[in-house]
Image 1 (cartoon, rainbow, N blue to C red):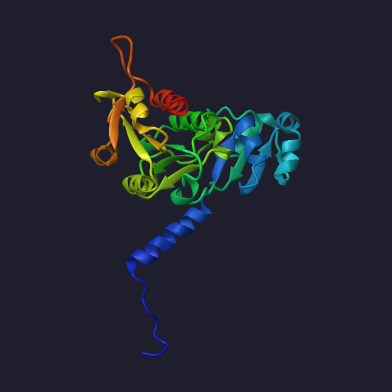
Image 2 (image 1 turned 180 degrees about the vertical axis):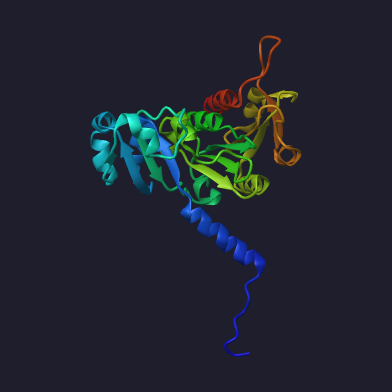
Length: 265
């Protein structure tokens, strides 16, 4: 009938609700390095800056660059002004921001003229591990770090502090489905190399055979490792060889070693 409202499907309503919730989401960054780099990042939407007098003096020009008037508070009452964990080493600096939007996998990871490397994380939820991986990814020139929305570490103050500024410069893409993102990378010519301590082939052997193809390094959480679907979507599983009887690396260390190997193949 004319003028009758058409009821939206449930999935459309849920998608719109999720989009609104995402738009309203904010993150509190803390610590001098993390706050300074976020203030100087033109891509970052900044909402509220809380500083002690000492932190404001140390941040100097970065405060002016951020374009946000700081709230100067007493160091003894700092914790009561910002909703961050009391054990956080904030150094008298906290900044409320919106999460960064780096864009789509297809745009960020398109090979172009070079042979890029990307890192894919399967259920790596520890923000300290992800922050360290972002730092290594920036050092070794990775195009992006990719993780699923669910069962991965979101942007948090702890992650940003561990990343020591890399969160502001290194694309961190969180996708709905990791296997779909892996298939998209395959379509772009990437060789997907999964890290597995029990694999027969070594990373060096595999890289020698890949040549100059783009590489996606796929790492799982410590303990459970890669999920079956993730393993099956990889082109090859490899191990990092070890000299002694103990052959297990922290996931962030494994990422750093693997990135170095790819960049020096």
